[in-house]
Image 1 (tube, rainbow, N blue to C red):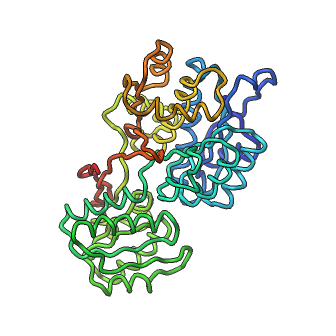
Image 2 (cartoon, one colour):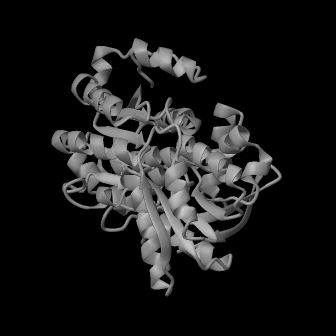
Image 3 (spheres, one colour):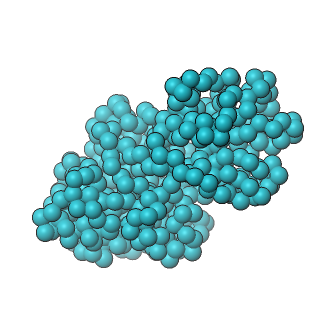
Length: 408
């Protein structure tokens, strides 16, 4: 059951979504649980946001088709963050104050999640995100334990960068970071892990966003003669930096997060400029039955394989975990009771389940469950964080090729 305002329907249509607002009878509202899908349909997160939103809605439909969760149907209200903290705050306020949602699902960038979490904390509702900033793990952001991260932390990304740099034989690493929590978190995580291996970072640059050129910052890094540059960056700034780097004729290698080194980067710069770049991203739980199920749903909804959008797998898991926690908490449970069940349905011990329907049946039979996610095994730590595996993707002849997986 999906309900959207006129502005959201128009925005979704512009992003290629074919969604229809559905009226809800007044006497049915008491039997619904309202969820806000707050995703980056536009802005730098737009390559992922539409798919994330579609999987939230598809998972809600699957939960409802199985009879709902905890005696209630899921009702989804969709908004676009525009990948902007300011826009996200306005959208979150609408979801909380007007739509009365009890969970906000699918905030993508760290800046957005950090801007929204004070609002969800004040409202006493859940925030399920795919952001990396370490600050989301601890107070004040997660002081109430209502925030769950379905993506790796930036610190974990940094450790993966260091493992890959070591495996590839690099010795003189430098870093370039976009000046926000995510960018700096990535490079600081790398530095910590790199130095723990007995190495040192030969140059570190933090740059401001929205510049027409990053030539000065690039020259400062190149002056240290690194053999690899590790970034905490986004698509737009990475595109400019790599174009200017290529013009210098330098042969330095690059390790870049997957949300910046993606097919859109190759399209923007071409095969010659991007040849040899190493792109690092978390990988889905590809061998699990839950992933196979998600993949089939994703293909029906988007005409693309599930592997094309790792964040869509995360938002699918958000909804399934939420639904199972609602079921475990019992009929008409409040947010506090649902929150108390999030780890219980996702972490061991328990019978491994791979779909909402299977988990609901096991709970009804009085058995403990351990949902194995499509995006990762989804074992939440004390901070509400998970640890997926990472893929090392090399750009070769204009194509991203995954050569190996790193577990940390």
